[in-house]
Amino acid sequence: MADKLDIEILEEFINANADLEQLEDIASRFNIFTAFKVVDNEIKHSTFLSWLMDPNESHGLGDYFLSIFLKKSVSKASSFGLKSPSVFDIDSWHFDSVEILTEWRNIDILIRCDEYKFICVIENKISSKEQSNQLRRYRDIIQSEYPDYSKLFIYLTIEGDKPSDDNYLPLSYSDILQLIEHLIQGNSNKIGSEVLTFISHYKEMLRRYIMQDSEIQEICKRIYKRHKKALDLIFEYKPDKQGEIRECLVNIIEKDVDLILDESYSKRCVRFIAKSLDFIPKEGSVLPSKRILTFAIYNDPAKDLRLYLEMNLGPKELREKLYEIGKSNTNLFNMAKRPLFKTWFSFYKKTMLSAKEWEEKEVDEIRKLFEERLRKFKETDLPEIIKNFEKFNYNKEDN
Picture 1 (tube, rainbow, N blue to C red):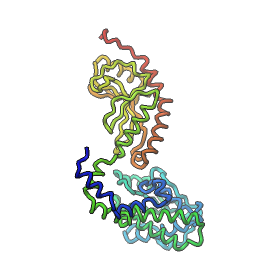
Picture 2 (cartoon, rainbow, N blue to C red):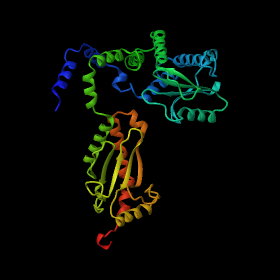
Picture 3 (cartoon, rainbow, N blue to C red):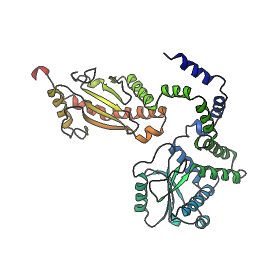
């Protein structure tokens, strides 16, 4: 039960809070990009920017944005002592045959101009951090694939963070905002009203939500300063993504007529068994259900969301019988080549969701992806797993 003082703190936070009302007013204004949850989604930011850069896209701007973006970038690169084409080179180029690619070899945005033997790599970070050697790996790929091209490597972040690889130019979303404002000011009479609205919505989204000095951030700072105790209470009890995904996985399994949910108390792990596999003797010593064999979905934000078929502690003879089944088909049971451990042992592993998908997608999107991949698993690997374990023969009294 909530403490009386806590309730009073929350009531004070809600009642006659002008800053909160202003924040709600801003958040309630329609914006295409906030409506489609683009704010923290790096892939969607990259998709929009690549659309704006592509001269052949439907915005009607030709190569205008690409040209001003590259001119600004090479000018900054020169001040950082990075080798790249000059502003005069870029100004003289025509980009009719340029290719703008997203997610090529996991690179967020790739600008390739074969006519001038020029290539630009953009690694875009909004809410996530640079992964180990990520920038170096991308640079090595480009050096290997395009050895005789002039190159520009850009590390785009909210504040223009210093990249781990000094060959990359740090660029900020303040730079992007300035370019978009320049684009709107110089082209508002030349492009269609729908495109202008679309680009203007992106500009407003950046200004409100992304920039470090945004209106929303200033209001939030004032609210937190005045109502720290109330907000700390709210943060303490707010739902977290890992917990929401765990509830989502539990709900999917509970509703599946072919599966039985096992004890799933942890946010990190959800266990279940296929009904067709529930004939295995319940002699495990770890789970309250006594099941020795279960599927386990590990829900870890730092890793891929993976599905395992696991065996826990139990009678030695029973474990050995199950292990022999796995060992007899290591093409299917892709973890059964290892010696049998004395503790938990995994027969099978399948990635259901990448760490990047876990991080960047909303819970509703994750639910749809998991449902689809679970369906495919039930159509392909699960019948084969069941078929193999139908060979199981274990009589406790004989051991």
